[in-house]
Every structure is written in structure tokens, then in C-alpha cells.
Length: 244
Image (cartoon, rainbow, N blue to C red; front, side):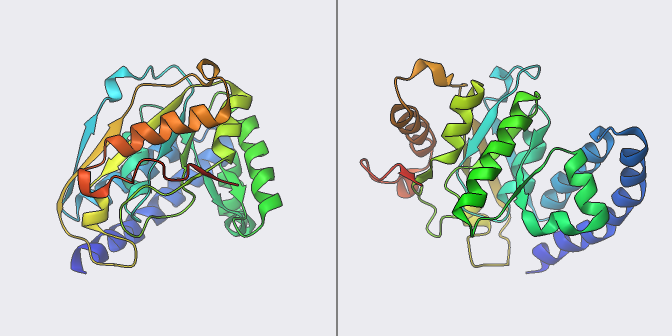
């Protein structure tokens, strides 16, 4: 509990400073890169304070001049602040639509090309994918937790179809990502954080054009992410691969 509170306190102290410096600079320059670096620095160091240490595997095979769609498993609230700072490129993410109504924050997120999404509305979810197409075609990578929600037992859940439509529409490589260890550090439903080692495994990029159809592409991504999980957390072969 103390480690989690320390992380939250660190963010509560550093994020207002980032806002004080980064927001005006972003508005004046139209360049979000300074604010992005400040936010990812804060995310990385907040996680570090909890005693969670990150080992990154396979990042060297990714060309930072390319645009990717990162698709990761998701078991813990630690996953976003742990993963995004380790990416070799700037990324966009999907963010709860209501946050875009906050005047200064909403404007900044739009400048950062973040994508609003209403997960309670299927039609709005389709609109979010279409908005993400514009972001990716503009050369900004996208990071998606492809199950759509956190797994409660650490095993891979069925995938959402939208991210694969996005990859096919944009024609950019998918990078499957397996996060190992966050379920043990901070599983769904628990606020306390247990220190330890977490692995972020970047699999080789997968060009969508190499697959005959979407189902085959999804099956390949699912197999790579699932296969890198420890044996107790691997989903059974033949598990459903997609939900609408």
C-alpha cells in the first residue's frame, strides 16, 4: 500500500510542474514533444519508486524512424505507465472521451494526437478506430491493449477486432508486446504493489499484408503474446481470438 501511495504522491507532485511548464510551451509552439518527454519521465520514475524494475527485451529490432501499432496484453494498472516510456517512438493512445471536455487538458491531448473513446458505446468505439487511422497515417505510432480490458487472472483474454482493422487500413507493422510480471506486482482489484522484476518483450514487427485475412493476422499476434507468458498464465490453445 505504501509503495502505491508513494507512486501516486510522486505523480501528484511532478505532474502539476509538467503542466505548468509543458502546457504553455505546447500551446505556444504547437509542439508536444517536451510535454511528452516530461510525462514519460514521470511515469517511468513513479513506477521505479515502487520497487518494480523493468527488463526490456527485443526493442533493438525496432526502427525508431518507422510507425508501428503496438498491441499488448493487459493485467494491471501498472501496464500503461510501465510500457509507454519503454517504446522507441512517440505513441498515441486511446483516452476516455470525458477527459477531453476538461478545457486545458483536452486541448493538450488533441495537440498530442490522443484519440478519444467511449468504451460503453459500440458506435463510438468504431469512430475512435477511424480517428486512430488518421493519427497513424500522420506518422504517429499507436499503443493498444488489445484485449480491451485487464485480465483478472493474468491469462490472455479474447482480442478486440478494431485494432486489426486499424492495422489493415493503415498498412503499418504490428508489434506484439508481452508484459510479464505486472499481474504479480499489482493484479486487477488490488491497490498495493509488490516490488519485483517485470519484463517487457517486444516481438518482431508483423506486416499485415503478409496474411491472407484478418483472422490469420489476429491468430499470429495472439500466439506470440500468449507464447511468451509464463506457463501458468498461458491461455489454452483454441481460446477465442476476437470480440467485436
